[in-house]
Image (tube, rainbow, N blue to C red):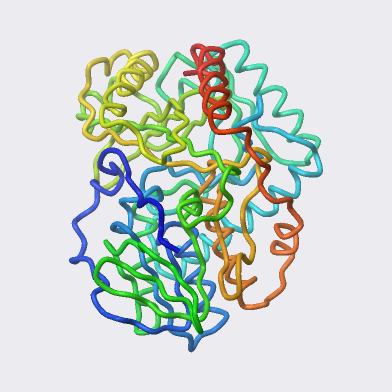
Amino acid sequence: MKVARLPVDPGPAGWNALLPEGPAPRVLQDKVTVDWLVIGAGFAGLAAARRLSQLQPGARIAVVDATRVGEGPAGRNSGFMIDLPHDLSSGSYAGGLEGDRAQTRLNRDGIAFAGEAAAEYDMSAEAYTVSGKINAAATARGHQHNLDYARHLGAMDEPFELLDATKMQEVTGSTYYQSGLFTPGSAMIQPALYVRSLARGLASDRVQLFENSPVTGLSRGADWVATTPKGQVTAPRVILAVNGHINSFGYFPGRLMHVFTYASMTRPLTGDEVAELGGAPIWGATSADPMGSTIRRISGEGGDRIVVRNRFTFDPSLEVPGNRVAQIARDHDRALAARFPTLNGIEMSHRWGGRLCLSRNNVQIVRQLDEGLFAACCQNGLGTAKGTLAGKLAAELACNVSSDGLAAVLGHDAPSRLPPAPIARLGAQVVIRWQEWRAGREL
């Protein structure tokens, strides 16, 4: 098959820009034969490579990616590895009780696998730490979402802490929020640092990483052959870890929704700005409304900064217009100024967009597609935890190794079919705009 399109990511990945430049990329320029080929070096692909190396220690594994590690979607998310239910299509993230319990077990499986990697490769706390997160509410409606979600967590026997406006100001330095809901199980990561550290830890004679090497064709004879602009890889078994770009390989047409979301990162705050802002130096808050703004305050080698993420756009072409990031930047600036008026007008050093892939029925794709071909895709907006889990489980499936997590995911339905393309596009755009309008001050 000829791959229909290659990844296009809007704007430079801000998280990656904070890090020192790594060694020159190893570009695939020869014909390579291995036991396993993993296409994609994000959360899913690197997790798959790690699990394969555990299950088959002597196997030769090649990982190929269209760009540099940390520049693709893995380096563009907000860095929340969320353990609890987080359905972006719901009003308050919650679903059915038993389904949410099952999803929490799966999310924690992915987070635990990431934590083991962080420990094995001696990653810093900036790269990975389990510190919990806050659902922040700026409106009475958002506060009610938090109360509803808290009741749901209570029924699930999950710990939480409700924070009033005073406590939220102590944490965030902002008087904007009416309340918060703290849950302790989420891991917070510097996403580019995490995936680059993971890739570096995996690198060996057995695990070869090829960057800036997009797969342009994939065919099967006696073995699978993946073609790149300057080389090719031959392997009997392949794991596709390309999230929504699985459509570009010809699979699941008309069943996946391609959405972009956007973020901006401030320049480093000065000492005076930090003192005037107050609050804790490190925290992360998703919005009580799924369409609201996600805010992180970070402190590390890149300085003390604030990251704002909001707005969603439906883009089935998997690309956005060149001016889209600049247009949405105004919303980021307004969101920051509303929460932190003392920082009004502060320069943003980085702005970018990132791709999400969702299914209508909120299921992942972890399955065998063909003889020797497996998928770890469609992370439904939670690429950090669900992507890690998908890669791990796809490797287990490919190696015929059973696990509770694999059995659970294999029991899921296939992604539901979408309406015809014009209806899907119009419907998605209308729903997104309406939900963002309804979010109000949460945005």
